[in-house]
Image (cartoon, rainbow, N blue to C red):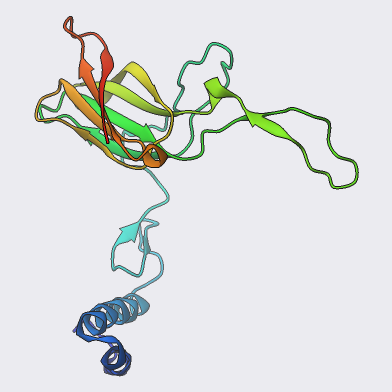
Length: 198
């Protein structure tokens, strides 16, 4: 079994006896993957590293890829870039790609001087810089994306999906505990928020 140490499996089984059969199976798989990875070289010849799940990760990107910062194009803050892209979704027809940011795009301004005794700073969120974003791209060929629109939502939580056609996009709101629906306008140029499902 790929050089898995049987003592590791027996140990996982003994622990698992106390916590149930499903947990025992999960622990056996976990300990087995650790044991398998322990027998593999830490770094492969191409610079890739093995991780505990038995797959490799590399410090380099796929050939031809490029890293771009997510610029929501905010006039009052031209240097602002969105953080934490958390979900990506491609439309069913393969023509559009959407990227959702989640959770940390909050910027604050001080509302009072620093308290000299505690060092505390009172602040408030800057509304136009404290949103999450959906970046909608047009997929052009096999290697090119063109930014079409940046949608602003008050908060989000990882949920992003296209409807059966390219005309509807859904995003979860996290703290809002709802799903937002965006529809492509009649002229087909902009996605417009059309509904909020509780």
